[in-house]
View 1: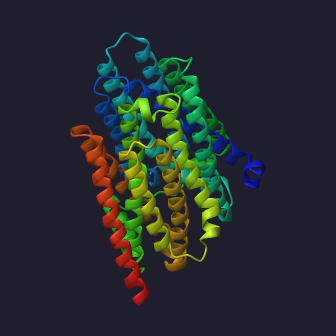
View 2 (view 1 turned 90 degrees about the horizontal axis):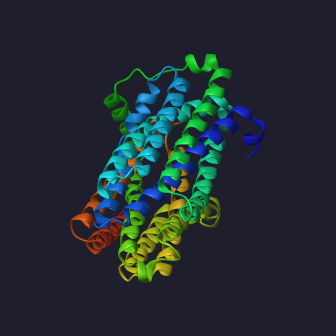
View 3 (view 1 turned 90 degrees about the vertical axis):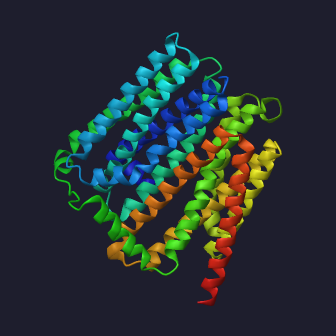
Length: 409
């Protein structure tokens, strides 16, 4: 935390990132609430979830393009301004008398374009943070920004659910647009003070496939690591997919599953996972310091099964408790995996290996979200939930087998 107060440029950069995250979640809640009132709400909510997930598939491409970008500050400023303009356009569209489904489809397309630009912007952020802090402070800086963003996002969910009681969808879209513009202006102020760093940045000259292949070879050298990464990636996918499926189930059972309002219920669901994950990262890693990562994964998968069963049973309170527990174990497992990676892989190839790990995690999560939300839209939510439950059981079995083989070796 001291780096936030001592380094003013890093502090500004963090505030800009946090502003973008807070604005985004406010609008996401508004769009979900509006879509939940449509006749075919299940399809609408599924399309929104897919539009949010697909850009994450492009994260590795966005990161690769960011590495090839010469003036990263200039690009991140323009991206923030463009995203701000897009949401101001959304605010205008909401203020017009446009039929529900036509409006939702237009907004989904705009939101998809904005989120795709966001993947490129996220790729630009990491090297810029490295330029702003000392080399040995990079982990602390990125961890602090990520942690605070998660807290702010959680708070924004509750604020958003309250604002929707007396603010229009158009106003919330405009607020989101203004947060991006404010972030762009902050990035611009940093860029002007770091002109040389903005221009003289190293770029990656390798092709995308060459970079990806090299990273894969590096991680594969560590025995058992790649399999564990895949298992945790699937576990993360289950965690991320539960929320949109649960929002569909709640929308269809408002009389028995809504807590206060639908918007507030969605905010509570998101907060349950976020709080659990944050506690897992901070407290769980200390409690389970000497426990194998495989045991943590098994506990997470058991929690996931409990969430899915309670969702099918329409028990919202038990859903929230077990969802928070799932977030807790996922939050505990991820740092343990990173610790294993650092301890196992040669430091010279660590960056490439971490890049591949993040790529796998980012790719599998949206793929699972797209798959199961599509199943829900095509049939019903229960079919998707059963499919996720079967997936959890299969991953649980794989983890047990891998754990036994690891002990034997």
